Length: 291
Image (cartoon, rainbow, N blue to C red; front, side, top):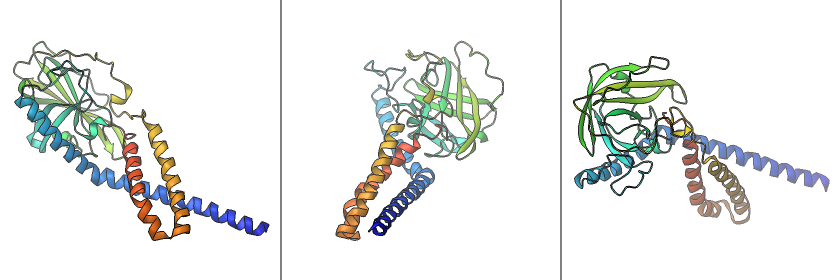
């Protein structure tokens, strides 16, 4: 009788480890597929929506010119604020408010504590180098003298690249009155191990627009919105989803033993697929925001 119980326990232990191993393998494969393929499709779909939204705001003269919208409400993270066009690298992308990892999955991000493009002062934009369309993946090809355009609710602004800066290089001089300095920021290194930050500096050609009111003061943005930052605010959701994934795998095994494998997969496949998507969605938030 004791031998039978030990054998039963061994089977449970083996099934448990098999389930955990299968779950880890499925998560790893899904993560890689999302990172290298599906993230670009997600980015493209979000960009179509953002382009339509921004064009509608331009047409109705409601596009933001400050950190608050035309109804005097603080712009939400992910709200479209500009359109960036760099012909040399084939880039035409909507810029959104905010620079945390989740926001940068939809577009190039505008750092909240800087002015909007074209306005008097300093503008800083963040863009991913590889995942979710990698909009800034080619900005290292830009050279001094190259030109590009930014469109906002105030109009068209033309810029000329003044240089590239690596980590440790001397910072920019104070911005002169009536001008705008724009900085494109992304990661350098390899896919999962960025080594440093690359910055492309550009100067506005012509007179700057009036600066809109900024609620967020320089340097006061949260840690998750800075260069190469990881957003851990919702890591608990990833843990919850992983626990649910394991629980559903065990339930699938029990159901399969009782009612058959085909019926079990018919019932559990949609739920497992949804849970897997939620796990990957939360996992991508833990990637540095510039990759």
